[in-house]
Structures are given as structure tokens and as C-alpha cells.
Amino acid sequence: MLIRRLGFFDFKDDCRNPLTLLVDELTRKKKPELQGTLLVLPEALNLGRPYYGSTGVPSIPAGDVLKCLKIHAVEYEMMFVASLLSEGYSEAYWVDPEHSPELMCQKTMPDDSQTYQGGRVDVGRNPIDRYGACVGALICRDSFVINSTPAACQRRQAVIEKILESEGHRIMCVPANASLDFILQMGGMWCVLASRGDQPSFVKDPQNTEISKPGLRGTVQIVDLRPARSV
Image (cartoon, rainbow, N blue to C red):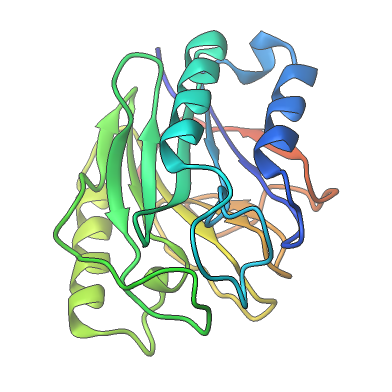
């Protein structure tokens, strides 16, 4: 099994049932459309209410979401990078058909919300090299260069360097609550922004060209990966 496609699911921030919406989107597609797809999901998928001004326990436990994603990963032979709130942290998880869900990273940089506490840079497996691709994850502001802590910058750079040193497809996943001024530019690798904010989600190729087309919020969009080559 190889990763042959990249995609994202996004939704408006006021969506109360994004997991149900995601499952509905997947079931509307045929298995050949999803096989070999790495699908990136927005930040705090399990929150179940608007991102800003929210505190307390998310509406869906992270473990329940991971079980659901695992079922669909097996059924459709696909992979997910999912951002979930778990025990007060904002975390990114890898889900595939053959292994247990795996923590990739915790979000360390603060934002203006009260939805999570800052995590650690030394937890998780990031990037993950599997299925013919090296896949990294940074949650929203952790992908920034400016206004970042030295530890967050070092972690960001270490993940990027590991991806660029790898063979096969090089992929960075950024689950986010992205504003319209959100900038994501990482040459030499595919980049997927999955957003619940005002900035629409996108897929960019290793030359930093956006190849996904703007679509309706609350939908799954998928693009084919071109053959890996040096850039």
C-alpha cells in the first residue's frame, strides 16, 4: 500500500458535528476514490463548538474519534492525520489501516483561545515514514517562523529536515484554525492545510503551487500525488 493521493476535510468553525459530517462525506465516495489517500483533518476536530471562547471538555472524547477513524482507515485503505483535544492538549495523531493510532505531536504555541494548554516539543513520532512517504505534522501556529519560541522553531526545523532527507513523497500536514492571513510556505515538500477558520484549506505541491480548488466548506477534497522527484 502506498500513499497516492492527498486531501483535506474542512468545516466552518460553528459546526457542531464535524465527525458525523466527515463520515457522511466518506460514505458518499466509492472505495477506489479513497484508497491510498492521506486525509488531513482540521484543528480540534472533536471540540464540537466554536474554537474561540470555548473551555472545558471537548464534545467527543479523542479515543472515540480515533476508533472511528481507524474503522474507516481499514474499510477504505486510507490514512488520516487528525488534530484532537485530549487531556487539555491539542494533539496530532496518525491513523492507518495496519497500526494502532500514533501521537505525532502536541501544539506548543499559544493562541488567543482557551481550548488547550501548551504542550511539549519532545513527545510523539514526527515525522512518520510509511507507505512510500515521509509525513510530518505541525498544528497551526507551530508551523510559524515568526513569533515562535526557540524550542518550537527547533522542533519545526528538525521535522522539516527529516522530511527533506527522506526518499519518496515528502509531506507536511498542518491542521489549523487558520485566519485569512495564514501563510504556509515550505519548499521541497507537499503541504496540506486543513482549516476550520476563515482561511480555506489547500494542498500545495513541492514548488509551493496550490493545486487544490476552492470548494464548499464541510467537504472532502482529494488530489493525486505526482511522482516523487528532486526539487
